[in-house]
Length: 90
Length: 340
Image (cartoon, rainbow over all chains, first blue to last red; front, side, top):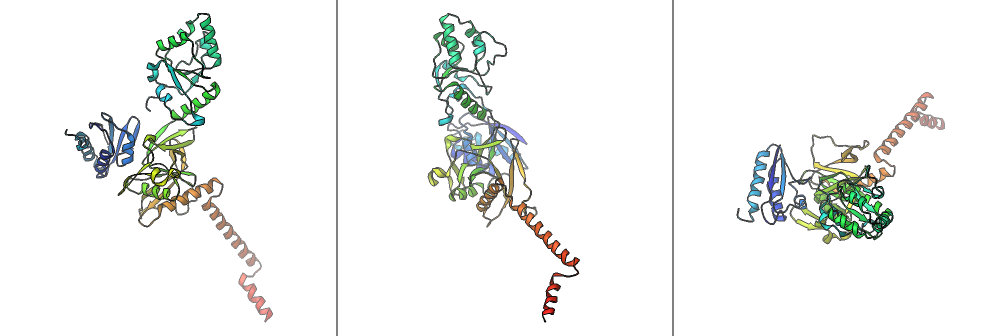
């Protein structure tokens, strides 16, 4: 299992489009991927779940990945956050 | 759990018979005080100068008695006990009956950064509403990935892996006149020890669903307000999973399986999904069956009772004929012969 803190770096926060990108990326992997904020944890393969998390700018999310391809999944998602969902030039 | 502050208490969105009708009349900087204990205290004894076991970390309620007493203290120019009370870390004070604190009291409370709230409700009514609200807020919570729908009055939570068709099943249920409570992220709290209450994780976002191929849809606008519900008790768990031909599924249903959420056992069904299997109608039937069980009729068991009874009577009948040296069919043939 991999646990990692990731920060929302795009100004607008996680709205519909970034949420869709997270889900698309997460769904490529077998592993179970969970994103946590405060004490809530949701499945990263569910769009509504991610949006209702309400992660605004500078929120730190706890990512928990568990499964056969956990390393690849964690890296791919972290990269997505680092690239600010291609919304702003990094 | 996230910190629950006095400001959160003020902005609680409770309706009609649950409303707390609170306004802040002083000590605003203290609105960020955290309420740690879901309980309240009437500070009568402390005002009288007795501080043993004074529950200072609770919400302090000033009703008619307490307010009359601080007015009496003010008229006698005594403020020591009030000073003493506010040396402790009090989350907030609330005046009921729309009563106002004395100027001294207000000054001391504000000096201690303690917010002063006021409500028009009488103390006893306010106390019971506050306790109800606090016990809901401090109840154990869990966020579950699933869809919560109300089907024939039964709260059914549909679980399953992503892409198994939870939302699609729920959409068809809504289309058939059932109600959506929450899609994807269900916030479940355990109230009164054994009741699981499910609601949408974020009420501000309303009732939306994500359907593959359609995107995000607004259920309220598409199907009307009759098709949604804010919260519902969870009474049945249906887990959808891809049909696995190597797996044994329950064929009789005489045994009740349950699953624990937050320590509460809920009836649990596993429903295999494959193309051509109509999942919504299975969920509808499961909900109706659950209602029957609640009314005391357990289909699978009653059926088996009938089978047992029938087998027994058949057995008794053949035993009777055997004891008389006759078989059922022989009797008829003998009669036939006699007649001939």
